[in-house]
Length: 358
Image (cartoon, rainbow, N blue to C red; front, side, top):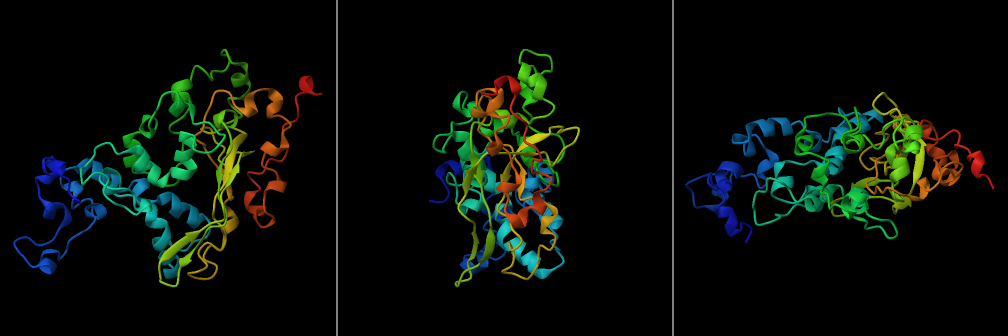
């Protein structure tokens, strides 16, 4: 049954179905009873969850997870005009599938996994991270973290300690009412939150003293390749069902120039991966809907979740220095994407260290 017996003993059962889902009380006709019903109660969180969880719902109402403001910001930077009905239709048909309301995390699987109750309608305060978080952040985050990719070890935080996502990414962060992308502002969580002594300048590890201010931690400590995707296209099939297609993903490891350099992110070198966007992303819905596509790179700043203490690129100085294949150079970038990626292409690969030349 859809409603597990355990739910009937839960405090959330006390208000009754109509309190959260709407509908008409006191009638026996099915159509009348279902008039005004919300199959997904948290589609209107203030009406359902917000009657009890006022503060949390007010905060989460404008959260990045709910509004998908990162998508909006990126599309607008690429020239998307949301006063155009074609752009709105393309966005709402495809991008909002990852939009998350309360129920996507606390009752059902995310919409990106086509929904479905996790445990008979039981409401969970702490969601199942690998069903919930992994539902949206699977192939490019969850699989990396758990070591699913052949030949690439799991992240040491999972491998050695079994740390769930929520160990670093707090509940407050999920509900946070922020706008923009996840890389706006200071890194959060940040490696130095736990490893401040390890990366201290003048500390026990000379390489940290040399590189802490110039190289993102993941450049040296990402354990191997991670997924990059390309050439996303959207549309509807002959039956009218929306689809999204991309080229087959590739396993890459590329060190790029830092496109987000700031006091909070001072590094010269960061890891980058290819995103599936392209100028024709929304062409099914209208012509030239992303007229300023080249305003943002297609190779973008990233933070892989496959960290290890010892990695192929930090075994020695020259495991990284002079290794042109590790760095994003013009030869790695498609000709029609060169202008978009100028700021992340490394102009000069750090040379081989003299003391280790053969």
